[in-house]
Image (cartoon, rainbow, N blue to C red):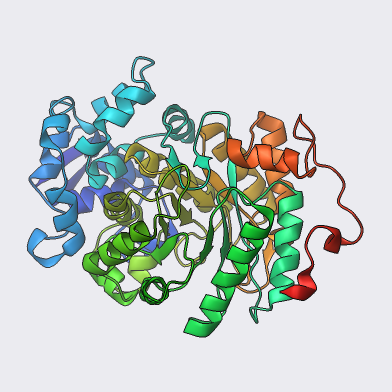
Length: 460
């Protein structure tokens, strides 16, 4: 593909779809580091103008990463629903943007066409959209999943309770779980990032989480975010695993750097399904992604990081996950330099994931060496609440003491639910009221001074 456009006395030529996508992206440090971004704002506008006139069908004729050399490309193209695509096949990317924003293009329509879209199309249209466009379209879409509760319903916002501890100390983890439950967090999942992938340590955490959930009959799911092969081993040994977790990326090479491929993901998916531990559904997979992972693994193929992020969603949707979240600012300022870039990336990721049919959440976060602060996170949290995000992360004080990054707190979950009139998952909401943690109108009840009235952490 060669596309040339003249703007005034300047002429710009783009030699491939991959180049157009990269140079049409809004400025971000990762693409600059990869030396693939537009050199000037004028060149960026030229690329966006060219991209607006590219037909969606052209994305099926020119792969940004070769089919023969990349497993993710093969998964994307082999699972593309050509019959569904015919409904929008005549549109250019610019026309597709306009169509998405039409009032008649409602959530049911967007749900129907999701299988006809490939990630590159979705990434492309996002590059032509303002933040409000990304929010408006995403807010139309409800991708509902279920395990022990139902996530993604209208008027609901779930929270992953993230009780990490740098030494996997059981009492420290239990105390964080109690704290989060008193703030109404944990309906998405009670999920621990273990300090080590040691099998015994991981399984001890799984048993502890299951004991807590069983003791208080909490209608939620638990997960220890270990490598998928460790989880498969645990399932084979009859350990009570709820969700099967794995970090994934948008190319075969980046997934190989994570120690996974499609076959391993499928094995984990089938192992999780075999346990049949869900009560209201059996979506048993949990994926995390993030812009910049491919570049950090030297596995990006010259493709911009936002397009690669969307490709990760194309892989994730093969496994009907309960949860997918972009850990948007976690990889660092080398990829998303400041609050402005993090906010934009979070809205892009959420939009792209939902349009591709995924139950999207966002870890609204940044590292301490990024040019960002908690006000930026407040802004992104509020925007994602309006956009209909499925779930966010809840960390004590918004400061993860094991992963050493800043996220959103249990208090932040109360804020956004209160401001927008959002509720937890319905089954979890009823449990909060039954346990006298919240009133009928979802006002939190003050916790007792001695948390052991609720959970005797000394026994864990």
